[in-house]
Picture (tube, rainbow, N blue to C red):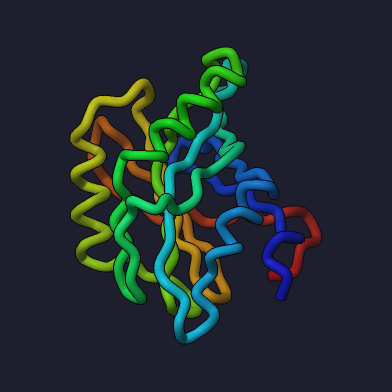
Length: 169
């Protein structure tokens, strides 16, 4: 199954959409834990909020840094490197990008967030960011799952991929 050929458009509870660019998907898939020795990996989501309709686009993601803590069943992102990567994108894009959340991998076919994942997402939702929405992506061996968190109500909801006319699922 080639995950990159699928459209990565998700519908939020408020009927806005999230689009994940193929280049960002490709970067995350490089770290898929499809081997018994593969370590968890992760980074931050960087993107835009469209002014005309408030839809979200994830344009890029940071990749694991040497300071991150990685093991088969755990990933702990450290700020060093990821912040510098974001700053370089921020400058390149004339300050027209946002931190939109976090991504990491799981060594399971269809990823399910762990208790630690949920606690970390809850912690992030209590922080102040430029926008009121964060996304959390887990890359599994066969599926990529996306969750949405809103800073106002602090709820975390799994997003469903949008169906396209005539698409078989």
